[in-house]
Image (tube, rainbow, N blue to C red):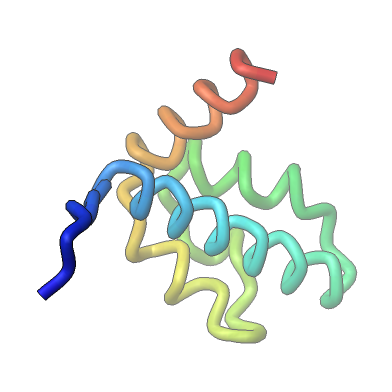
Length: 81
């Protein structure tokens, strides 16, 4: 057994997952020649997944994140920077 207490943070893990997913989606859109910021904003506003390319499984990945949760993390990140 270990003498130290392990900590577990679901919130930080989820935040990291959202950030990683957003980076993958951003890169996939960029590689396909799209303006990633415009496409991601279009997706967030409309919930229309066709704003996100299927390249590198980006569309499937972003759909695993609730839009409200994604927007909350983006606003928090913007305000904290």
